Amino acid sequence: MGRIVVVGAGIVGLSVCRAALLAGHEVTLLEQDAIANPNSASYDQHRMIRYQYGDAEGYTRMVGDAFDAWDRLWDDLGVRHFSNTGTMGISQSREDYTSRSLATFRKLGVQHEVLDREAVERTCPQLSLPENNWGLLAPVGGALFASRIVDDLARWVSARDIEKRTHNRAVRVDSERGEVILEDGSVVSGDLVVIACGAWLPELLPNYEGMPTFRQAVCYVEPPEEYLDAWRNSPCLTDLGPGDNYAVVPTHGTGLKFGSGSHRRPGHPSDGFQSLASEGDEVISLFSPFLQQAARYKPLHMRVGYYVKDASQRFRIDTLGRTIVITNCDGQMFKFGPLIGARVIRSFDGEQSATDLNRWAAGY
Image (cartoon, rainbow, N blue to C red):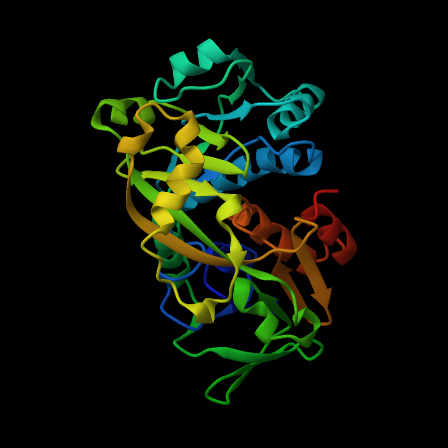
């Protein structure tokens, strides 16, 4: 049995705690705010899990393993915080993301259906697509209820024999010694330190100074009333128009969420979590060319999060002495949280090498 120290109580940090507890290890969880932290990147109404990953075969395969990991979590929690709405990407040109996803689906045998434009609009009558557009529908995928998952996972972890230190920020990590220095001057040490603190990482370890951090704001929107049921009965949209636009549908008490990679900008958590008044309209405008009655969509509120993201767009799980650093997650890592937690503890237990763990996380 080892002592595991986890920095950060988002989906990944909590998942590492759960995996460590299930494996019989002692666990200390460090969180600069409350558990769960409402400002963490993990805390939102819902997140999408989908097989569409372009030509990234490793991540497409990983999604299947992620579903298995979620099923094991549902068994532990006694509740299933997931709505299998299906997911659909819209292709507008040859070799775009959806076209590459189709090639990957065919190669790997992922269940899917190809819909022509008319069939897409019958499935999603709230959409109005240009000629020659078509859809790639995966029947398995949909909305993970993120904040409900984090809340219940935090309760599950807290009900076990675990040491928690909250409202005390980690300010430095000695990766070789496996020590975390907190802002009150205390030192927490373990056989393994796992850092899963998102955009706060560059402040903790000099190895990660200068890593790019970004501010991402998504918009919860009010559609025209006559299209509300259409959204409720639609698959989540993985790609809609240029700019990495996606929509998570309203289901089981959640709202309709629009997000776009093109609305990402450099930023740091110290910039705050407030949104600008114009941001909602900006996000909706990216979807407007493809919506029926687009002018009647209204922004309700924004959700702001911060992420580390470099040009590789591949997850990193780095091993440095007695420390494992989980980073470069963007917003994509939530769907893999329980799977990553299990893999990290498997590596600590000697079931997978650090090199193989890093390559797996990068999708190779």
